[in-house]
Image (cartoon, rainbow, N blue to C red; front, top):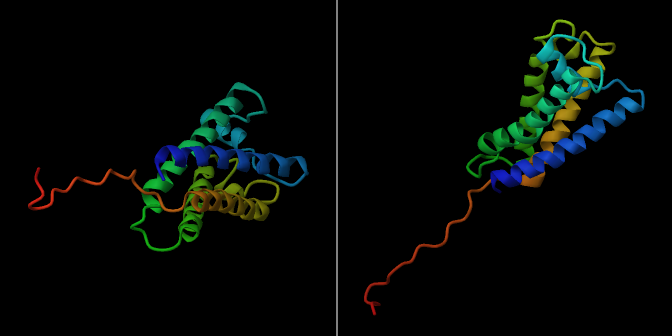
Length: 163
């Protein structure tokens, strides 16, 4: 699969993840607002919805999850030369982005590593893990192994068949 297809799947995957994240929040279950979180990390201030810093955070969220992470997956986790099934490599990728996001959250002291300073830290850690695994599994299972575009077969001249 080509990178353009990988990014297209990343966009669809990000939309699915966004619907899940925001619907969980509407049901009253604690969920992270990634737009507000990335806005907080860029400005250092709390970011209420639909403010400029929240929109910047939303753009960062979309760029990271729809473009950057699918390209990283395509280059490092999905090539045919890698061993293992696509879903298993996607699972490993989900754990890697979960760890990276948890460490990124530690930059902001008010949030803490893996959002442990939130109202329900265990739920935040497990919820983040499940969300990133679902994202990565959708990305990996739909894409499967990434292959280079096929090249046309080379023309072979058989010995003695000139004309």
